[in-house]
Length: 138
Image (cartoon, rainbow, N blue to C red; front, side):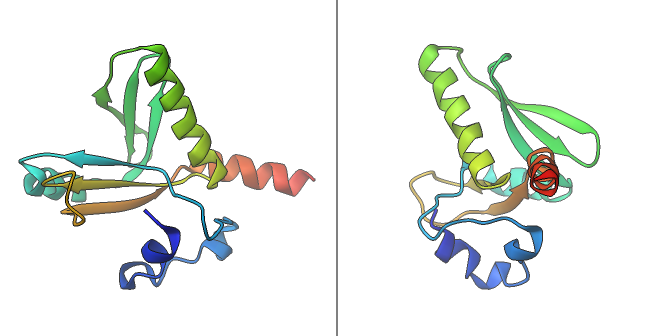
């Protein structure tokens, strides 16, 4: 998903990445997960009731972790642990770190569709605060 289309959308006019100190280049692709399901609407409705905070790839456990509220974490998905999957998970986490922790989750009826039923722009606060601490100490 391109930054310009995403961030200039009327849905995100109130999001000020400069205020957060997050620099995302014009050609930077924001990493994320797209979930396709025949039950996309009920899944999106359920997730809309959660305070979704972030998603992370747990390479050691070969799983995707969904963090909600302050201290709740769910195993959102598991994947077969292979060298290729491990590299992909590590690359995804590196891309998320390069964006200052910014990432997204979308829920779609069909992964080939350009529309989504649910969309969350997320910020991994661990990466955000770590980056702020490092920048403050320099």
